[in-house]
Image (cartoon, rainbow, N blue to C red; front, side, top):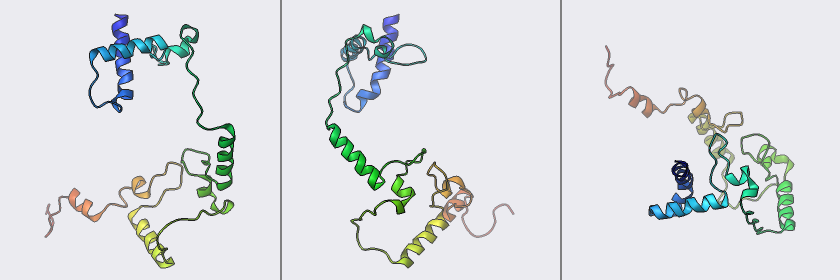
Length: 175
């Protein structure tokens, strides 16, 4: 019974990891081999609410995991970190995912954009007015939602309203 439960848990735990790699479904023997390998190396999830790999629960019972190989040297990582700090590419505090150079652009050097022709001030103002009218402006806060997502009743499309009321034109329906 325990082996069956362990096999079932292993097959469910391993399915998402292997689903993206293989187009064909695994055979019964392949699933058994993967489950036994997971049991041997301690990557099998434990029973209970913790859902930790067995290797983390009892590390002495399993062979040591291979050390990860670093593709960058410490100096390269430090250089990249310093460059990110100086350019403001570090993430700001909070859950928004906004970078520091987006929060306070005046504190960091400007980045040159490799873009097409620039827009005039009037074109930018017109785009902003359209975005405000459509509710495509970010709400103050850390969740990154747009006004039309927070207040959907204020920014409905006229086509959507007509579709909701099944409006077919030419007078009122209920009178």
